[in-house]
Length: 119
Length: 119
DNA sequence: TTGACATATAATCATTTGCTTATATTATAA
DNA sequence: TTATAATATAAGCAAATGATTATATGTCAA
Image (cartoon, rainbow over the protein chains, first blue to last red):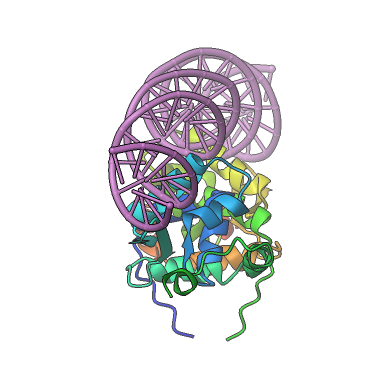
């Protein structure tokens, strides 16, 4: 077991605080399945679009996620290159996959898949 | 690699929020080295005793730590039997040991060791 | 252009948080 | 008993948080 205790406590605490919000923790868990765009999160969470946007901003400012604009959409993904990613990953490894939520989206035709649009 | 994704997201988030405070995260990390009493925490953190007490209470209410009274002292320890302990442990495994802080205490004669007192 | 859709930002507000000081409780020792 | 040490609780307060509504920005398509 290779446990690298590399994340200083001063940096770890703010990350855990971010993940300590149910919405953001679920977002991160969803991103373990791959990138998602804002409108998907808006569909999944029973919450206003600005609220979603603000949560994503916090995660981005902390380096937890990356954003990429593709046309009208902005896609978010886990920032696996971040020095703090090992901490994020080890947390997410302890909680259940949220992939059902994405499957529900697909079944309702609300999943945004870039290659489908771009063609 | 045996990752048990057993901690529901509703229970994980509040624990992460608790550990998202630098003082509490450091407390938990210290407890990885063994039990500590309140006065040791009070010595370590530059903070009032009631503040220490309130942090410990939150950790206790969440089931993260256990308390045992021995004479005047109250000792705290990690609650390894808690269903959420795997999450706590995997977080603490990512951050550096805080044992230096305890060694400093010993060097200053501020470490409280029960067997030394009881005799 | 213009209109519609996707997203971000600003302003506001109620709630939560983490600290402080003051005081209560509990246990030991003189 | 009474004093003292260790800890907990109460009350108060400033700052942070997470939501909302309203508005701005950016992209695409007609």
